[in-house]
Image (cartoon, rainbow, N blue to C red; front, side, top):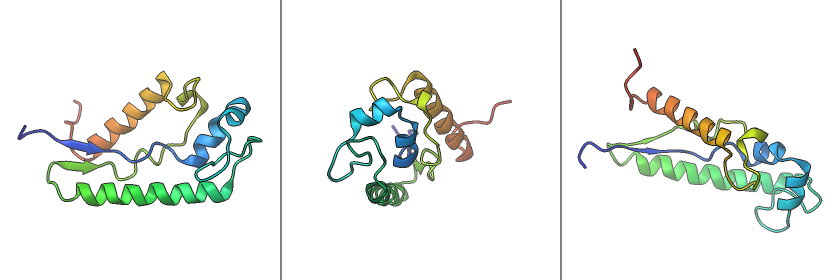
Length: 124
């Protein structure tokens, strides 16, 4: 596939905007303890875990960008997905997946980033 391209995306949104986009009931449902539990069992945000998870995500994204840079046909989104502010309408009823609106937002952001990178032709 000599003309194929690889487009690598960053983490959609952020742990903090995701947690803030959840309903109170969803927060109680996903709250927990331990590493990466950004929401406590009582539904409150856990700032230390949010920071820790952000650091992990940013480290992972740096590795994605660096790895992609080794291949001529690989393009990283330069954090476009990470710039998204999560909204309640982007989250499915089970808070681990995108809703239809979330998929649409992800596609919009990816398409815009691909156009910015020159991977798709400009529309007339």
